Every structure is written in structure tokens, then in C-alpha cells.
Image: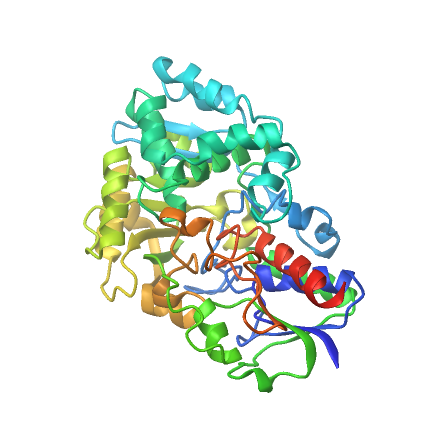
Length: 468
């Protein structure tokens, strides 16, 4: 009998498997797809030689994740590359707000009225990333924080909505727009609980860790985790779809890197997660380009990530439409251009470009035209540089990754208190009604993002419940 079986080889499943294998347990992983990775995959989606990331591309929460910090992933091929600027947020007049590695450069891009305000916002937490990240990316049921004073101070800010923080902290549109764009990574209304904390955490990550890309693509993260797991004696099976718990070999514990509804179906837990809600989706386009994106704003040409859709109001309206089920009209876009720093992504002189806009869950339309019209506002002539494109709306995203129910790449709504109470209110959110079955996907705390922390915490819960 095995000690543990992990279902799903995304970053959380692989992290959970590694954590259990490091404790000397016999662990095997079963993945339905033909390759490991889940949301950290890299594929030739457009033309030969153009390597695209179908889901995650830029990883501010991974590079110094507490879960990955103790793993020798660099010895297993993972190399981080930093663009000159982590993020640019251009405006139609050719200027841009920027999120830099340097707080002063970021503040200066906002203008004189907000520069000092931004410095004061981040000052209490700057230089304390390892503590802030460990405390913020923990489960709230897991003992005391490392630094209770800083945690409480951060919590007073983080609990606020991005809308309230932007309106009360900043005067001008550049700071408010950039802050709203950071919060929009959570795919929740800007008025929602905790969205201010998301924005602040992403800002702090840029200043202390950068927003890097893995050389060769996001697949490198999964491959490094898989290689380390095999070194520890773990076994990985791909192309193995699990439909029932008895499809798996006998084990003392079963850990699911899946959606809660899939776990309930496979493990025979009935309607255990009947109240679990999925969030909005995105419409994703991967481009093969003949040349870099011709951004009007000079800073955008140097940034690994570019937010498109400048004002707080426009961003809020785009998110509202996605949440309430409306077709996208003027989408807010999160874009990435990894090939400006990683030449392995495209043939010499060519480039890859990654972009998504928010759409309702399960939306079946085509957002290509509205997305490209939005890009052209800030990069006139963009369409002339397109060699090929690969589009994926909610149905295609769900087909690629079964965890993305209705195309929800966060594996569950983060609106309101759902960011904290994932997948439901429970003393141990990773445990289920079955004593040997656990959940480790991003449907559990601390939620979405490639940081491995859901898998890390779930593995600890498994160890304490089954093996300690």
C-alpha cells in the first residue's frame, strides 16, 4: 500500500507530493493530461518555435514563495529571468505609471500628489517580504503569524477594498489605475473585501522579488517540481484520468489537486460542495509576432507585464461586466511579453505575446476584436505585427484544464469572504468528510496563484491527520 496518492499534477499537487515525499512517504501522482503542469504549461500553440504559456506566465508569488524556498528547484533546471520593469500601466497620452523594483521610481511615475502617499503605504512592509508572504499566504487556522504586529497592521490595510484604498489614498488617475489593475488579478469586483490586500501584496512582490518569468516557459516550474519529486522517490503517471477513487491504487491518504466538485464526484462525497461558487472567466489570446508590440509608452516596451485599460473606472466596469454576466465591451487586459527577456520563447527576431480579458463564466463569445481594438489604443499598428494567434475562451480553457470550471482560472470565486473561506467554512479547509481524502488545489487557502502554498498547507494537514 502507498502512503499517499496525489490526483492532479499542477503546482499545488506537485508541491503536496514533494512535501510528503520529503517526509519519507511513498507517493505517486496521477495526472489526466499527457504532461504535468496544470496551469504551468508551455506549448507551441501558434507556429513552430513559438513557445507560449496557455495559462500562467509571470510569477511574482512564486520566485520567493515560502513553499518553494526550501526546495532546490534551481538544481532541477528552474531559472528566473527579470525584465527591466516588472509592470507598466500605459495611458493614451503616451505616458505610463510603472511598478518598478524601486519604490522611488514607482512613486515618481504617479506624479507629485501621490508619490509620497505611495511611499507611506508600502513603507511599513517594505523589506519584510519573507515574513509578510509567509503570514499572508498561510491558512488563518494555522497558529499564530510569525510577526503578529506587522500582520495586524497589514491586515488593517488588506481587508479594505481596492476601491476604498484607491479613493482614500490617492488623488490622481495614474496611481488609482495602477492599483486597480493590480487588484484585478483577483478577478473580483474592486469593491470586494480583501481586494486592496491583493493589490498591495503584488506591489510589495515587485519591489522585493520582481515579477519574473521562468526561462523556457512556465512548464519549467512544473518540470523542476517533478524532477525533484522523482529524486525523492516519488512516481508520476500521466495520461491517467481518475473517474472513481477505486481507479487508484490503495493508499493511506488521497490528495486532490482538483476542483471541489470534481473531488466530490470522484470520492463519492455527494453534494458536499453544493454551495461552492465559481467565478468569472477570461478570454485568452496567445500571439506569434513579427516584432515587439509597438507600445506608445516607452516604459511598456521594457516591462514584462503590461496592463491595458487605464482608468480606475474602466477597470472596475470591465470586472463588473464579467461578474454580472455581460459581454465585454471595453475589456481590461493583463498582458505579458516574456520574449523581450527570454530569447528561448521565439525564433530569432520574433516574439510571443500573452493577453487575456475578463468575461463571464461559461461565456461562449469571441472577444478577439474587442481585445485587439483595446491593444491598438496603446500600441497602434499592433495587428500588422501578428503572424498567428491562438484563442481560448471559457469552453476551451475548461477543456484544457478540468479545474477551470466554466473557464474560472482561479478555481473558485474570490468575491467577498470567499478568498478566506475556501472551499467552505471549516477548521481544516483541506480535509473532507472522508478521513483519507484531502483537497490541495487553489480552491483552498490561500487561493489562486502559482505559489504552491495550498499544496504546502494541505500536505501538512495530511501529515498531522494521517501520519503523525
